Image (cartoon, rainbow, N blue to C red; front, top):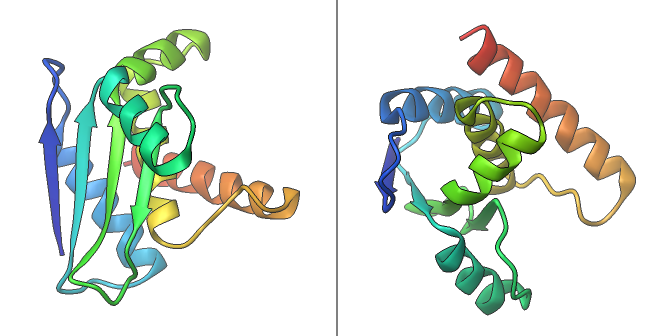
Length: 141
């Protein structure tokens, strides 16, 4: 499993920690395998362009996940707005790193097939799993 991280911002992110947490979640939820996952770190302007093009929403968002299928060579792309993460961290009284990894885990779960847009039960299940992995792999490490 290869995790490719492209940081198109001036902000430091712990790529080693990203790799570790993402791989742990994928192994626990699915399996280890010969596939890749791409993670792009960007700004609000760029993620707004993606959000407009692919979701028809002309606003920035924190994370977009593009799932290609767990049997594919590249299982997906995750795009994260570092600017949005900074804003949300302030709003939720989190550190930048806490908010970043919480949102990263959310994106990974979408790649693994979780969704929260169809029913309240799906939303509840996804956020329960997101919180579990945040505690297990970020807080307890």
